[in-house]
Length: 388
Image (cartoon, rainbow, N blue to C red; front, side, top):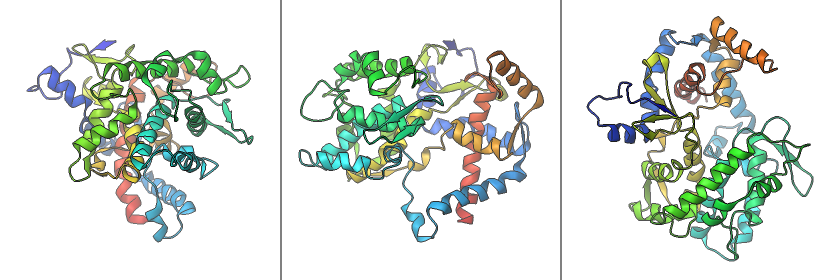
């Protein structure tokens, strides 16, 4: 673990615990990355040359993709909130609804909301790169890979009771997660030598740690299930209005003990999660909290549709700083690796038998790329809205 207590605090008037609390917050994500937005406009990034004149092409591309599925102005209102919900329906728009319909005989909408939270938390924790070869095969023979395939696999595992010791419904149970075995996970994900998946051990560790956390935090999770969060949200809402920051704080309490600690930045012994030093900030910390954001986005639809909540301050969430979004700006020429940075990445690639520049996740080029992704998505939004 890297301890940055010798680094300058974001605000020198803050105590270390206050500083850590700030860096855990959703507000810190956009605020700690604000310096990068200025550097983009001035073309003063450490690792990339910036071609902002190519942003018009990005706007055209994004609008074109949207119009392929939502051709009329009226249909734009049907665009769902970004989240895991859509992944469950990849290739079959009724897949998740069929599962929910089967549950309605034994539970009301409020319990359905809890069950969806159970499912989504598990599915998001399983959602890491699967590699190019792995695919999940459904009973009807349909094959799905990557993130969508993992979502579908997690749904089948969930409905078959893999994540629970309790009979009477497909739930998630802390004691079962804490003792989930590699064999059970390999079987559920259909991993074999012929169908390999990268990072199975890492996924298992996350689920085991989640189970331990659900058992340890019985005040927030009396039934040892992520769905207990819905009761916490109900108690925190005012006239059905739930603040995004309440959701965020609860998710951070659940997930911080789950995230890996090895190689992660810490401040005076506090592990900061998805937060990294950025060279252009003199080693100051930028926060991303990508998976927590992905989960927060994913919970909005079940909380609204089945929990009856109205969520405010959703705009505090940012665009996700991940390779698909970041790749948009690289592929369309807005960001271009500086020659010396590209050469270093190719040297690493050649050593590892790869054909494209390669870097470790904690390297400054990746941290800056992710920071740029947040800022460029914020720049892209008003331009896309204007053109649509």
